[in-house]
Length: 106
Image (cartoon, rainbow, N blue to C red; front, side, top):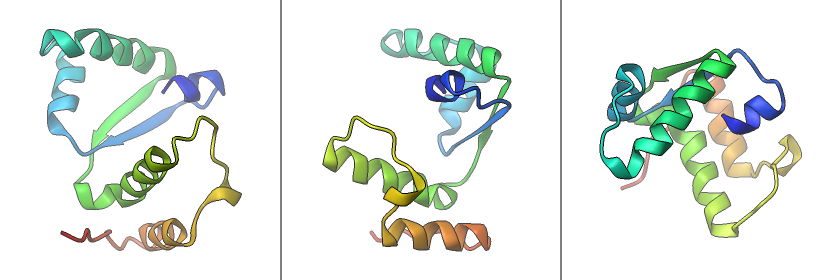
């Protein structure tokens, strides 16, 4: 959300597969004290950006899950662009565009 604010990307739709996070954001509740500061920062960013936080099922978050794992393993500190997308992620995005859910391997 900070990146979206920096690059004036608003209005913004944020899709989250954790209903607890959505409940905390909607109620402005602090939850555990360890995450209170983070929740309040997200609420402020949400107000500045006119951001809508919505629940999606985990299967709809396939691209985000894949990208998060890839970036964490590479320890990147830069913004990835369209040209940086790998073949696997391109496939997930293509299926997502067609409305096909991403199935996870267990």
